[in-house]
Image 1 (cartoon, rainbow, N blue to C red):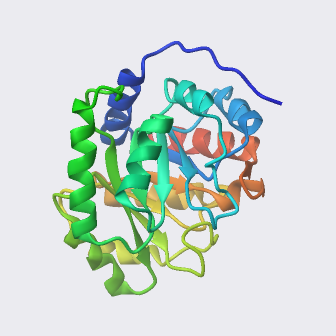
Image 2 (image 1 turned 90 degrees about the vertical axis):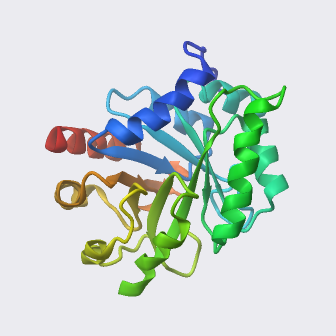
Image 3 (image 1 turned 135 degrees about the horizontal axis):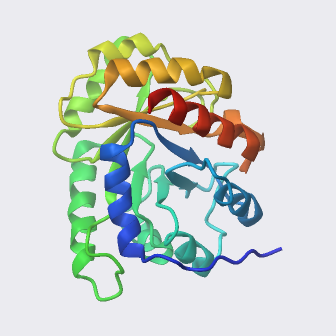
Length: 255
């Protein structure tokens, strides 16, 4: 069954809201790996809902979202920031999806290099001059850093002045959605003073107090969390009640 959504705000304002939410929210929450229109609609009806939604454009993922309707995604993008997740995609593929779905940010979740990120960033900036592009501000560029050992976090420094946000995820068998946490004490060695970051990997509802403590300890650079497989009923089908409860708990604790 297809769902409909009435446009109430402009895409331009939503782009600005992504930057604003990242810079001002005390507990930014991104829900990644969504695909079902009904599931998304249910989440959007919640009083306590996330600040952004992530859509995976990696065909090997069980949460692949490339089959979503263009018109649905474009309308959704006027209500909440949408972030496209890519793994070893070409620049052309990424830019095509940004324009097709009106994505507000690109999240690179593979082993993409700083040079690739730099080139892509220039292309994203150039989109603001394209006649088919909706926004006056370029989409943000996020980069996942895969953490297993203490030294892995030092990779963040290589992306200084290139990315808008780092996402620290646990290195596992798959590129995301492994449901495993890394040792958060590694955050003591976070090497950048300019790149904000989100925590990801194995975060569950029962971790809300630990997330709260981390947000207090590592602010202002730690802006929030990315949640995915630990809030699912099945791959790409989220437990709406658990997500809403998690967002409510964080907003109460950190406010």
